[in-house]
Amino acid sequence: MKSTSKVLTGVTAVVLIFLVYLLAASRVSVRLVDVRSQPCAERPDAFENAVTAARLGDGNAIAFAADAPGTAGDYQFLTLTYEVTNFGLLPAEWISIAATPEQGDVLQVGGDWPDIQGLSRGHLAVAIVAPIDAPASGRAARLRYYVAGRPIFADATAE
View 1 (cartoon, rainbow, N blue to C red):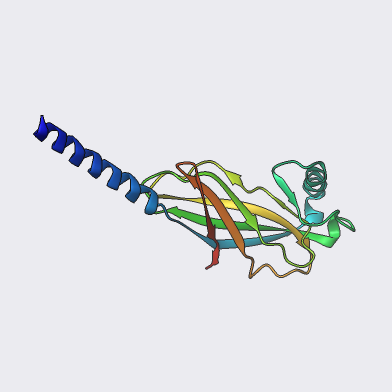
View 2 (cartoon, rainbow, N blue to C red; view 1 turned 120 degrees about the vertical axis):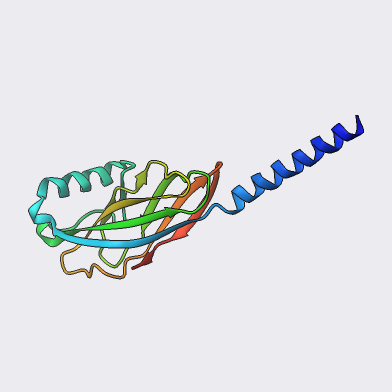
């Protein structure tokens, strides 16, 4: 009976240490790999849909400004593509990314993605409606994801 109790205690300790390791080793890296610019005048319907979605509080659009002054010709879509690598064994769940707005940015479209399984990578993209003359480089973002129900944040780095 004593030997069984010692064996079960040892097995429990090993399992607990492994679970703590899984949670502690959960790490995701995120880096900006591509930025593309397209004038909103080339896609006026997409521009109007994005502005309307942000105005109505659609979860897929984040408003940075109260409204978009001007017309589609005054703005550009900046599509930011991020590579997210999950170094942990557990999946990164409920992933969302929020770009840090620059001066004149109006809104962000996109930002929520499905899970990225452990030991894998994926590409995520968001579009920002920015002034037509805004620089595309130097954009920062913050990724939020969950591992075993625990929120974790990672900052994006430029390539």
